[in-house]
Structure formats: structure tokens, C-alpha cells
Amino acid sequence: MKVTTKRSLIFGIRMAGIILVTVVFAFPLYWLFATSLKTRVQVFALPPKLVFSPTFANYLQVINSWFMGNLFNSFLIAALSTIFSIAIGSLAAYGFSRYPIKGSDNILFWILSLRMLPPIAIVLPLYVLFRALHLLDTHLALILIYSIFNISFTVWLMKGFFDEVPKDVEESAMLDGYRPLQVFYKVVLPLVRPGLVATAIFCLIQTLIEFLVALILTNRVAVTATVGMAKFQVLGVEWGQITAAAAIFILPIIIFTIFVRNQLIRGMALGGVR
Image 1 (cartoon, rainbow, N blue to C red):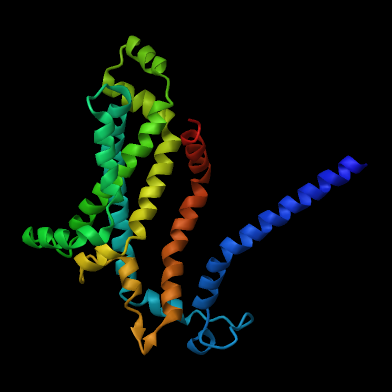
Image 2: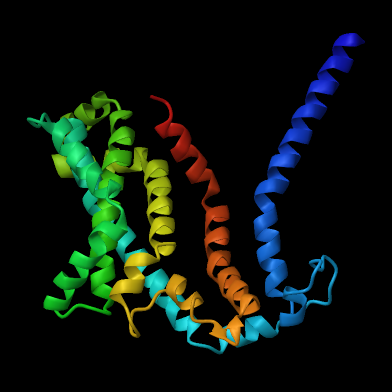
């Protein structure tokens, strides 16, 4: 009886902790969506109104504004840069994992150092470079920059996933007549698919939330959603419209993550085996 009571108490404490952590992390999302449904008067009310009559006026204003074009730019740039990063980074990671390369540790550290660079340290040289190439305010400029950042991240992350694949599997496939590239595409990649999904999600999110580079290198044509949100200032900061734009921006990401959550969890678990 005492054992059962003790187990129930431990279970209750754990559930209370889980609920508390969930509430703490979910509250900003609740506040974001709640603010997006408030009028300007309700947003600045003191004390804040927890019970109010919701309105969709902010969403209508955002949908009928320039922001939807910015949103399309963000997802287009993020998708293309992620695809390019995964394609190139996976090949490089597989090479580092399977083939002896002299000084590979130093090369890997140099690749990782590209990801360590703060954007503020390189954005002005990038501005000068792309101005000389006549690529300012273009989708191609942002795709190239984000791909460079994401490739370094992809190489490091995917190398760990490839290291987990036994070499015996590849040797067996080669005995069956597969060529090296066929082994990579038909044997190895399916085995690390959860890792590919996890890496792609991280690259996609990192690209979508980037602000500084997009702010400096774009002006009108290739403006992204993060920069577009800052334009909702007419008579002061329009928090209702900003939060509505943010809600529209993050909702597809949340839905996409829910659909691929199993692959994401498996990928994170596979990467943590070592």
C-alpha cells in the first residue's frame, strides 16, 4: 500500500512538473495569438485583458497587405536554400564519414567556423560583394548566403548520422553490384532519413527566422517575413498586426512540424546514440 502511494505521489509530482513546463513554454504562444485577436485599445489596456471579445480585423489587414508577398519570399528562399544545403552537405558529410581525408578534423572545424560567425560581422562585406555583383534585393543572394550557413551545419550534423550506419551494409550492397553513388542514394540515405528530416527542419527554421542579413540585403523585391513584420508601424507600433503576421508566419511551421514529428524525434534520437 505504501509503495503504491509513493508511486502515485512521484507520478503526481512528475505530471505537475510537466504541466508547469508546458504552461511556461506555451504561454508566449498563447499571448501572441491572444494579442493578434485584440483591438488597439485592448492591446494597451492596463491591466492586460485576459477576457475580451476577439476580432479578426488584424488578420484581414495583414492578409490584404504586402506581408503575404514577404511570406512567400521567406518560404521560397528557405525551401530552396534547405534543399541545396541538404544535397551538398549530405555528400560532403558522407565523404568525411567514409573516406580518409588528411587533416579532416581541421577542415571540419573550419566548416563549423562558418556557422559560428555572427551575421553582424559579415553582413557589410556581403553587402559590398553583392552590390558589385548586382544581386542586392534578389532571392538568389539570400539563397546563396543561407545555403553557405546551412551547409556547414548540415555537414556536422549529418556526419554523425552517417557514422551510425555500419559499413558492412555498404559492403554488402557493393557485393551485390551497386556502385558507390548507388550505395549512397539507395542504401545509406534511406537509413538516415530521420536524420535528413531533422537536419532539414533545423535548416528551414534557422533560415525563416533570420532577420539581420535580410534587412541589410533586401529593400523591396526579396523582403522576407521577419523584415516585413517591422513595417507595421503607422501610428506607433501596431502590435495587433505584428502579432497577427507572426501567427500567420509560424502556423505553417507548427503544422509542418506536427506532421513530421515522428521523423524528427527519430532523427534526434539517432543522433544522440553516440
